[in-house]
Image 1 (cartoon, rainbow, N blue to C red):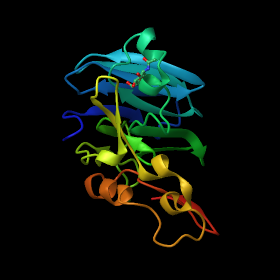
Image 2: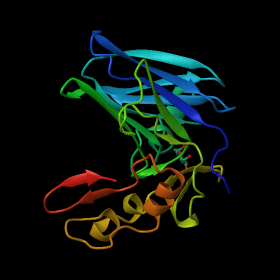
Image 3: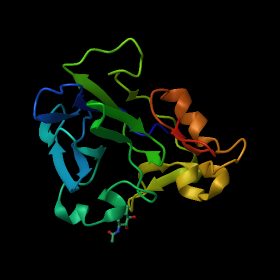
Image 4: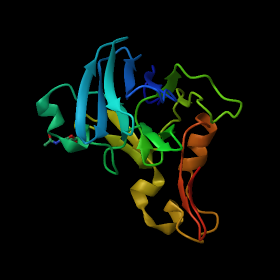
Length: 214
Ligand SMILES: *[C@@H]1O[C@H](CO)[C@@H](O)[C@H](O)[C@H]1NC(C)=O
């Protein structure tokens, strides 16, 4: 069972430090209407039909996350946190994370599947060239989602797949969530993500000297 067929593309602006604000453009590449969610200071929603875009203007130092969901078009649906709330353990979504001007005037962004995923997702910088390092203004993409193991599926009341949890978010604990000093931590989830979506974060790792994403 493939999760969803087409891609939600999120387009971000990066490294344009001379302007007073940043723009973030959502672009829905799915056939169905997708509701983009943006969590900064509270959650904003934007309904986007197929191939429709919406641009938001944010401050130079804005930090937050963005995602897309089906079936979150109206207030009734949005009142159900499991279905439409800010992504978390019971309601995972593929996340695009941004921290503008976070260090040395540079903007940072990433895709995170650490808590799970729902839709295909991509971030593309506009007006910035890919650097020599693949992490400098690259376009992280997760367009070909893995098949969600049946133990990790999150289903709606209609029995249809809403998303896929990570084993850390589902089971918790140091073994699955890579607590300090735990060797060979993590279940099958992170390698499954890394294989299909190598440019996305798949797990959170805590060691005695550093905390890092991989
Ligand atoms: C909220 O959404 C979830 C997931 O679709 C569903 O299982 C649940 O029944 C909904 N709750 C209400 C009160 O509608």
